[in-house]
Length: 93
Image 1 (cartoon, rainbow, N blue to C red):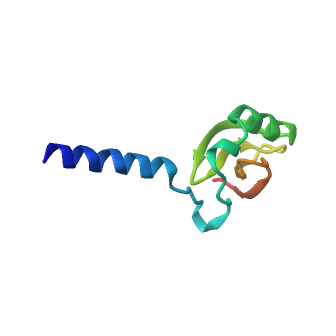
Image 2 (cartoon, rainbow, N blue to C red):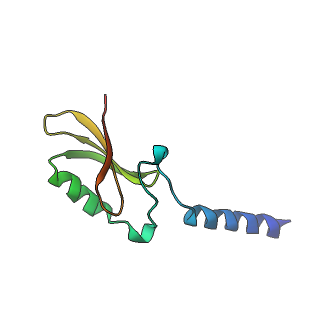
């Protein structure tokens, strides 16, 4: 029984690592992790657009960035992890 449980846990972990990650509402396309640009590149791309970054994380296959815009408004950006293009943005309250 222990062997069966161990095999199940190992298989589940492997599936979680290899399963495609999809963004909610399909805003980010599936990109294998090997093709993702680094988080440092994502930070540089957002800063080059004039945003002041407060937080960046991976969320549902996108880089999710919480930042302040040029006029001080709070904004959330979702970046495609391969191209670093903004695929969605919204004001935060």
